[in-house]
Length: 161
Image 1: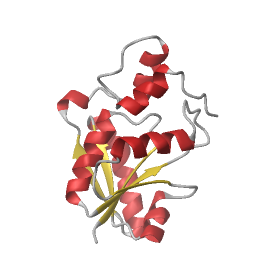
Image 2: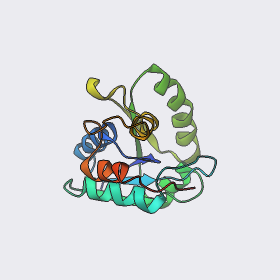
Image 3: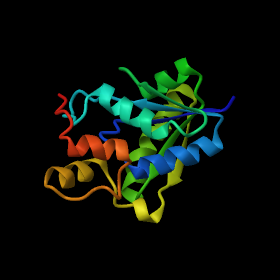
Image 4: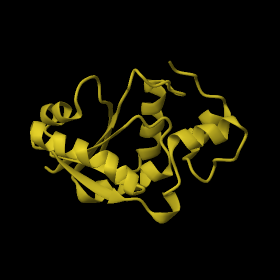
């Protein structure tokens, strides 16, 4: 079985994420959406809320598992879960410059490969940070996020620590 992971904080998950995850599902038998927590970051949504939004949004896709990544290195997570590939979406050359050293280190640590998927042109501008900022300032983000995310953003969501 070919298994891959799409890691991220997904705070919140948006249509750019969904597009990359759906494409990964077409390439691999199973795709684990590993929702991470970086304790140095302040999150709008709790880990459970982020996982619920991902599960609700991805329920129609075959071969998708949503789970917390937990603590520790992504390379070790992949080794323990029998995952052979990390899938990362790239919006720009700066994403590539950021991701390449991590991809190389992950391969050296555990042999896991990284597959880069270029984002669709109409999603190049999307980021969770930008979506949260626009939403908090009263802007319409309905074209950029799934309904389950929009509902939570409009309701105010939680201010997870």
